[in-house]
Image 1 (cartoon, rainbow, N blue to C red):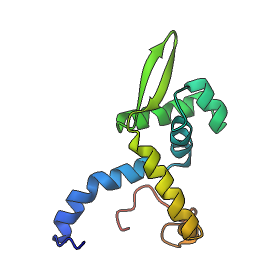
Image 2 (image 1 turned 120 degrees about the vertical axis):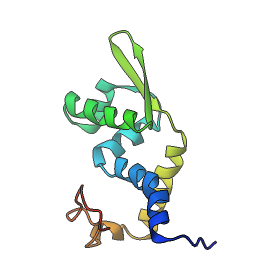
Image 3 (image 1 turned 120 degrees about the horizontal axis):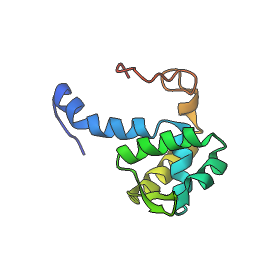
Amino acid sequence: MAIHVSGAVARVELAPAAALFRSLSDPTRLAILRRLALGEARVGELVEEVGLAQSTVSKHLACLKDCGLVDSDPVGRASVFRLSQPALIDVLASAETVLQSTGQAVALCPAYGIDSCTEDSDER
């Protein structure tokens, strides 16, 4: 399938997808999403799962909620979080398949590897 659009149009059309992938680019957010793919969880459970402070986990949950990727319901004094987009399970599974089939080459890539990522790069 070939799609022919100008560079500027393609960048505008792809901006939401790029924002989605940026929201998934943090290992903590991925760990939270992976856990929520198994079912609902309270913040305390997620804190145990990712091994970080509650304030850090809450910050990442707020980011994921702002992006529309997770929802929460109050239960007593706590909140129970769940995926708001079940299709994320397929996205995460597809990413794992790509990583397995490439031998995790992206982690070694000088442009996108773990040690070379920057938050504010628009060049990539």
